[in-house]
Length: 377
Image 1: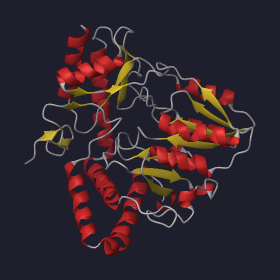
Image 2: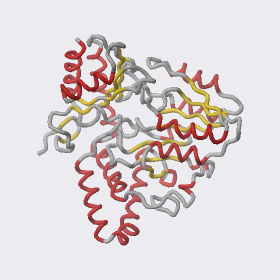
Image 3: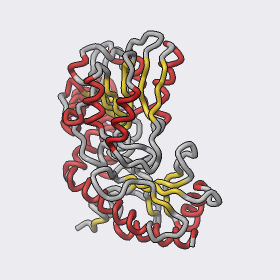
Image 4: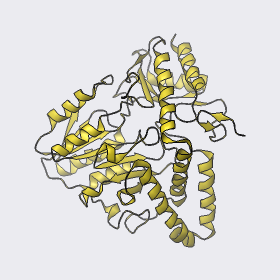
């Protein structure tokens, strides 16, 4: 019988001995059962690449697309397989038509990978980006909704925002912002990179027009996989080159993808289903709330993420005093304590971000807190 570690089996992940991994929000580890299936399919593919790649494996990739759609609550034909969130967002940006003077409304808390496509649109078409500032410790959803509402103009075409803010893990009011967009004839585009796999996501309940996410974070899928939801109501409103030949995993316009990785993505959905999405979310939030409480007692640390409640996610961020650069604390935690955390980009704040998942335990949280006391006490 396998010994459990968190919600996972102890041998499901191949971490270096002694490592406490609290960095799923950047790159999640892929479980060994998924890796094993992926490499088995890869070996099979190489026995006769054309026969499998344009036959059984191509058909299997469509099965993965169906699993992915079910996982986020949409129809298979509304789901496109991508390589990451950034690719999905870029396809959306490329696939829309704009005129000079059009406007896009977004926030100052977006990940660079979710922002770059809109910067390209602004440069190429003379579109203006209107920015809603969100302070790291802003926890009032109605204030955010009001800030968006105040900045919508008759030329606003698109509202772009994250489901969970990469900076603090704040759970944005996606359904309300999507309804606001619809009320003003705008599209709502959601960057879901930090959500799918860590919390339950149903894109229909969220009411957005499009939603992009990655496999390499909370899904724990092979790196280089992702999902893009394009609501059927859009028709061909979003019409990038990559989808000219349809939304299948392989088409004339998409070209050949990493077939073993896509099949590994399918195994990832099975891995999550075996544990249960609701159970995963509850586990992740329990550890996050344990950490939130413990960090209140650590000197020189100020938690900026929301207190326990409906606005939280498995991401938790704390700020540090100016004389403790976040990069230096990150390096000490790694080298002295074998603990991996995230350095929050300096344009957001001087701090670190913690993300816990199925393989983490209460002991991992305690180990981090003890290490921080040692370094900051």
